[in-house]
Image (cartoon, rainbow, N blue to C red; front, side, top):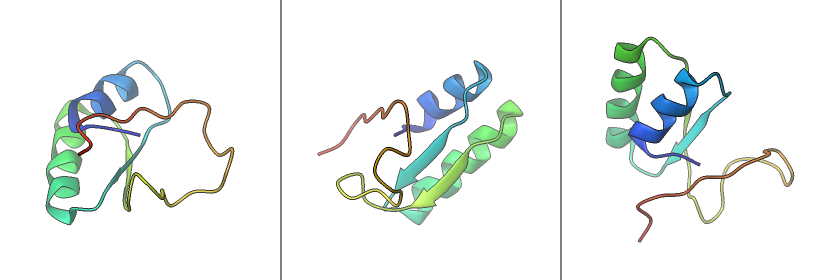
Length: 67
């Protein structure tokens, strides 16, 4: 789904990106990075194990740094 850097890079490449994280603090950092890069990313609070979206909502799901 995202990591902060991947979200920006994918958005810069022209993709529609949604970012999900349980941490509101991490989402705030990610929003700042996206804004600084001049790209739009839809960041949402949620769990990568049970993302806040319906089945078949995305063509690609990218998950990094998940423990």
